Image (cartoon, rainbow, N blue to C red; front, side, top):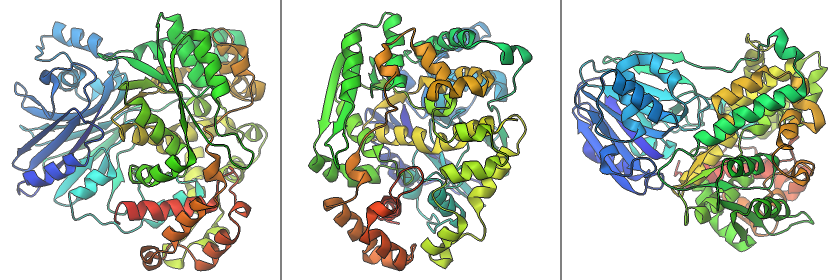
Length: 591
């Protein structure tokens, strides 16, 4: 796990070393253990390293393959690298390191584009071929590892964070109106390739992009989940699916123990993280480090779920760390968490993950986390209504979107308003694609490939890497997701949602965790904005910078300030927090 950056120019000019150093310095939190740069003519690359696999300097980056005249930077972890390494050695390749970085560059030499589907793991990497002048950019199947881009006719720049790309200078930071429409509709989700800034894009998940020496480029989607089912799949019983699911989960969890340092678990006390602990215990892990976080209660709403995380920790005898954050400490750290976001994210649990990661990183470098199970196995409330709808797009929009086009026109100032309902059009286009016939499957595919990538996955990456902590997500093992796509939706939505996962879990973990009310990452102080939190958002939205930017109509802001609790989105989020977070993020990035 690391941070990468760089620039390739197509006009013959040289990339300045000081530019690459500035971009690399911006990534220090992602890789606090070592730094490296490579600058040669029209190519510059930077790398910050978190030592996880092959702790020696032999795997330092940027990594040069002198034999094949290539240089590479890589962020992530390839879980099946030992097997690939042995296969490549059998084909005549020699290695100077023991890590996964060199395996990627040798695999590209051996198989080209056909190497990418062979990689199991999370990854974003860039390879420059000195002989051909080609640049290869690749991102993993679920976009677990980010790759931001800024390009013009004479160059392409990349970085693990949007901030690193900006550090290279001369980037158009004006607001993308279509991206803003998505942000305001999808509670901050902005689908790739867009970001809120016109001058910054992101490589879509599961994509190979090849840029030729003259700057021309091609993109290829190398993987997408299928929801096509055989007659045998339709006929299988829930019990059979549970058997297959547990086998796949055991493999996914076991893969993510590939490491040269200890691995812990972020234990919320929900089914997903509890199941990870249970499966690791099954595989003989003893003294496993587990971590839970809680906040102060607010408005009679509990700020922690220690009751359930303690139950699992005690049941399996883990080395458990219960972390309690007082409200004053959360308030103090909110600006730092916002600054750490590569894009603005409104979920209340960002600050939870930020502070949890801070504490976890004091004792360990790698954790497994339960993100993705709700999207993959149908755990959200908007899936059941889709079973009987005649208009899937409208049913999804009503359950999921924060605003329709009319309300959008009353909230945004005219110069920032998209000309049409871009978000509804995006959903309609996505739902119309082949490969998913049932409305529930269409929604699960959209959420797995879009919402998951640019909300929970991005949130976990940004907040953990703010403290040099690597998070691995077994529920996003691509073979597990492929299996889930074959499971009929009736099995997923049974038992109140995630039915087949819950029933499989009964064979591993205590029923009290499975039969509890659906949990979440509780941060009630941000759900009910009052006192110092209200003052904070009023200061941000009333600042000179906000007034000059003029994103929101003043009449709308006045309504929000008068009664924050009266303006709640269909997904129970605060409209005031949503608009304030955007402005605070823009100010934190000095945009």
